[in-house]
Length: 103
Length: 267
Image: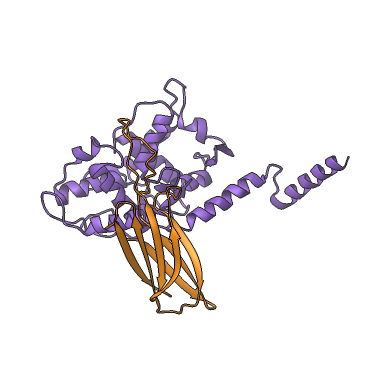
């Protein structure tokens, strides 16, 4: 159970823009710590965004994505008061879902 | 011939647009890159942790920091950072945000300042202070930088900070002014503001503490100053020591009237 995401969603002219700030270490597994030991890989593998029950974005993440990733995307439809949810899974089996209301 | 003509034309256009001959598209591109970064400032995540810490009962005395006085009265955070560092009557000294938070943590929660002063950046209690800093400075975003310089202790600190700013030392004989005492310098993609001027100091003081995208770390002002000392190959200053607060007073006083854009975002 990671830290909460920050999600903002705004609808304009039938298009909803979603901005998500995700709190995650996104460790590549290629770095070493001060003692020379490899820091184990720990990153988001999958991210899904839904508008209500409908999937609007499905993506595979990898080690090339930065720490605390920022994701912005638009989808057609959506109106003020609708719910948008974003969930991720990481390679350690952890997952998290957060919700936001479109304004 | 045609080549010369193009260059002349380009030179003319630049002069016309900006009034300076040295306007470069390179800097425009960097500015645009920064603008893109600023859209999703991960400082928000740190600030959210800080807000929770502020309200959580912690330490031997199981208290929250909600009665912490940052200068505008107990518990008032809005705009408090824009007026810091300041002279605090209860402690009888000039304090920056981080040393003030240590005072609050000691008095309200019973957390020993020693564990923070002797600690490491981004670790343990010092990391918690950084999260609190993120929360507090976010509440001063957009405020006018307005430090109260009337108290003699503030004036003393200002003079000390100024002295430290120009003090050349270390194996490379550097002072802060070596890099920050001239207009238009930069290191790689980072502009180096001329901190002697109001404009430069406002750009510098007003955009720290900040999140650094390149290493994914949130840096407080103490962390920033500590690294300036390191870059000059000087011994690290003690966390929250007078010299670091004095430098902050010098910067904040010079930046007076500027706008707080905290927390900043850096490459």
